[in-house]
Amino acid sequence: MEDLSKNESLRTKPYQAVVAGVSAGGLDALQTLLKVLPADFGLSLIIVQHMHPQQDDFLVTQLRQDCRLAVKEAEEKEVVQTGVVYLAPANYHLLIEADKTFALSTEEKVNFSRPSIDVLFETAADVYGDGLIGVILTGASKDGAAGLSRIKSKGGIAIVQDPKTATYPTMPLEALNETQADYVLSIDRIGRLLYELGRTFCKRV
Image (cartoon, rainbow, N blue to C red; front, top):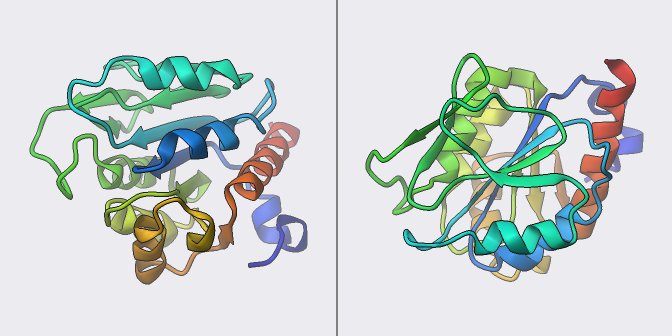
């Protein structure tokens, strides 16, 4: 895929949020991704990481160590803020409401998962439209493939970790089977791309 600097239409769009989905191998991938982002990153970053239903705050604690942004679990009715990394709580679907607040749900699992990447991506796509960036990282399921397709259909950007660089390539491969991604990159290059997109947004607001 072409570099951001070579695609003027993507480089100048006013993005608002990033949604990312990750499963097996996620901790290392997220740490690599987040450490690239500056403290003044201009977008909100909302993440679904598949985890055990009884998972404690281990992931939040680990990601805070090398991240210059605030990292927290999303809360019911919380307004989505720029420059914050939000994580879906264990055993809850995370949704984006029309007023750009979070909603938590204990409805049935989707793709055997709760939280489900598809649930976040599809609701976020409906709210943010072409202002949304979707990212699929390492994982061993098909969750996120349909959601990334929804983001693309609404005019957003679809970014997929290069399966050859993923600890578990199944999820990136499923996403690529479902959607023509705008970028297929290694995890460190995804971080740099998000940095550029966030910087573009800061210049336009």
